[in-house]
Length: 445
Image (cartoon, rainbow, N blue to C red):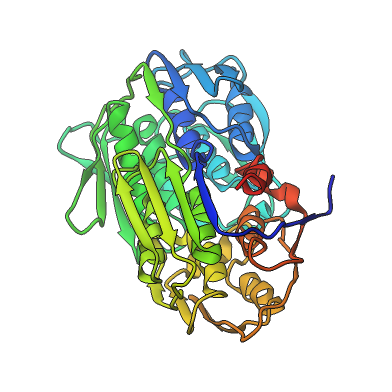
């Protein structure tokens, strides 16, 4: 395995890029198809570490999954949303390794909390440091059976079912109220929503958000995907309560297409902002399921031209036009905060990124470690609990970037190397988590 990757500096860019399928959509779709009645064919699926550990976990439950990685299709014979003893997959014991995939850990935890059997979920050491207490507390309210194997509030977890939840209301007009913390990860609410039909046999369920709900576009994505699989989620106008009707169940749409990954697209949209020129991302638009297409709006504020078409996004910066620093609330598109921070190195004036405290609980502390790596390039960085203020230096320095086994650290800082000769990325293979071909695509620009 290569220990470092040298980035080749580029001239003015002019390229069209189609990112791989969205990791977030792929892993949601794998769960939805597994719980739906009927067979589902997923197209455009992403094959990466995060999606492979999800599929492997589902296969350990004896789900029928046929993955054609060449054609990027996955066929899944769903369980009909009923994981009672009569319909339970044959394998009622499994030791499921999730790597450092937050979506896999959280989504399978919620699903298996209502499944008869004896299951264990564990991952890399960093996964065992990532909080999961708020999800587990909500599952306990619903009667799910989840126990901590080690430190309370963190994986590894032991799971299996109780035959019914703590609440047994049967009237259609009653609902189990469940409080869900919103300020650590939107994946907690997504996991609960995805698994909610398994707990909504005797009663409807109403999820009430406590605190600020971070990364709202990911919740909107989940709800839109659930609708495609036959379940309507009722939401209040303030985005504070989410209701699932009693007896709700998933139905396969037959075929479901996975969009290109908008978070991955951010690195290539950032490239012309840094180098000058133009990049077009194929397959994404303002109507995308993914809120991270909003990263292009940040670049527009920094003085780039952005063109939105029905099936593409283009970012252009004439070589003689200066970038300017901005203030950005990136709560809704926090997976692109590292990308914007790297673009900020090349702007005139400081850039301030705020309201992303929750990214401290990701693959690494994405605020503290981002500040450390930006300083290697000579930048002045003021760190806040919820973000950073980045002041670019008069002369940028080449740097060897530590990546902390975080795919987004590697990919965002690699883009800086398109402009600064001599940039080295440590542990480049960490990009296999979501984008195995990243460096090949970057080299091809």
